[in-house]
Image 1 (spheres, rainbow, N blue to C red):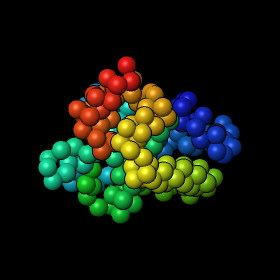
Image 2: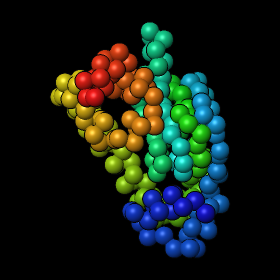
Image 3: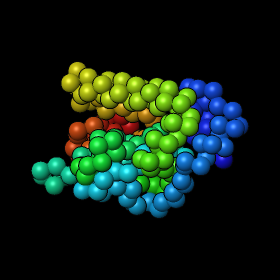
Image 4: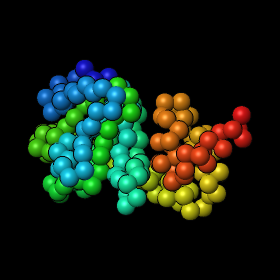
Length: 190
């Protein structure tokens, strides 16, 4: 039984034991070590991933050969290159573990079969996707609206678990800041 996933789904839809049994046949557990890759640039993303335990990051390598982190995922978060997953095209992203992680994977064909057999999961995924899109829109607004210092302070206040678990240079990449600037901000706060 995948406790975190089941509890997460139950936040949005009803889920009885029979439905859980059906759901389990579509889910594949994946255990990963720190720095393992779920996806590399150029591969087709064939699954969506739910984090039962651990932390992952999604990033691309920019023209300057620097990693640009676009997403983190902790427990109870979904992560995937949805364009690649939906269109079956090569990904422009990497998905890598930040720490040892236990992931639940649903591949493309299983996902479609699951939605046919369990139509209520369509509602669950719609809600999850709406919330993810809203969070992405808010992040974009903050990137333009807040000063760099305000953006960093807001992130640290909103997501203290990331600050404790994710290396400083990764937080800097995610926020579009340099590691040196984040280091200065941290010293100011101490």
